[in-house]
Image 1: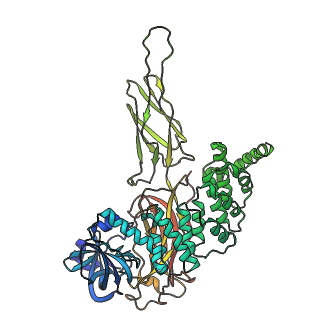
Image 2 (image 1 turned 30 degrees about the horizontal axis):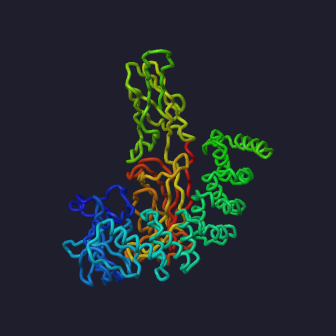
Length: 341
Length: 258
């Protein structure tokens, strides 16, 4: 990879390098993306063609050696601005990886601005976003907020779709931080679970529902984890989703997970029980003090401290590591009086 | 917080109530010299005015330092110890002989990255044929999610070819950092279209099934700034490049801050 400062590029060419530190991919900011675009379209994007033309790619104050590419767009809907039904977009990519990516082929939302060389990509980190094949009709110009709503509706359609590619669905799920909590998206996730073509995709969508506080797939996820039947590529995501639960209604489903053979599953369930701090779980938490995995024991101690209000017996992690016996002893003593009541 | 003096006086009398208040933010952060927006690395506490003012740390003097100046006090992390529970630091002020109620504070520091699941891999034609994204949320010393972006950076070691490959000879990735919550680390193999002598040639179907590692790059991730090497270390690992995906191998979480 050739990375050179803008000034050095023109004075010294590619021989001069700068320290290899910089800023990577920023988060997707939908308001900025729609605001910076002159034209937003939903289009069938052709595979990009390398133009064999050397190009310099700018990133902040650095520029990189790269090459130019072109994609043809057959426009289905124009969401913002005006453009012909078919258009060509040219863009440059660096020779090696720095986070910029090419236009992906297929049905996409593409964000463009009009530059000196025609239509240009607005944001090379996010040249396109997944789009659904449901028709979009925009007659009047939309505000930026309305445009964001259109994008979010497209995301929901992709997730719910029975025909969208797994890759597009995964892209949408990776933008979860940009998708606000809404019933629209939850409903899309539920439809997506029903329409999922693979177990892996279904489990990813189930995890997303749990993370968003929807318990409709909880029992199914619990069964997957208890039977160690989850896809190896989604198990830790499902465990993470379990650990985020804060709804007391989840308690009956969480308790069996404390008997899982997978210690990370037990840790996830115990973390959720800590967050929920339901007094009715005291007995099961006392049993969890005997768990061979220290994270489970720690979460049980913290949960008991929260449930009883004895916060001084809910130590920090370093304190627990150093004096675990003291805390376990306290809660076992407490158990005697609790059980005697 | 406030303290008051006064009393019950029979008959007509002047009854004076004097409040001694402390106001200010209740959390102080430490980022090893970095100062990310949205996190207070120095907190100014303010008391009621008075002619004789004395500040003190009731508990937690190993966690914060206090520098009083009139009715203001600057609170900073000592950087050696941090809170074990929210509000376990107590500050008080005495204004003209009136002692305030304790003002509870918390000293926080970034601790670790919590994985959000297995890396997702998507396929491209250039400048690399796969991009795997490892995603994390950032947790502090109390294991709470740090929801405001704290910025991150990485420092990378020398790429090493493994298992008969020559991938390491084409150079490693550019260290970069970006936003946290989530922290997303993109891992892309060298580009076979630019490096046609790559052996073996990477493949991609998005399924992350490869089990043989062909390139390894030591990685250290810090948070608090995008400047490489700055901030607080929250993870050490090896960037592992496989035939069809990348991932973080041998993840080492720092010990929990004391």
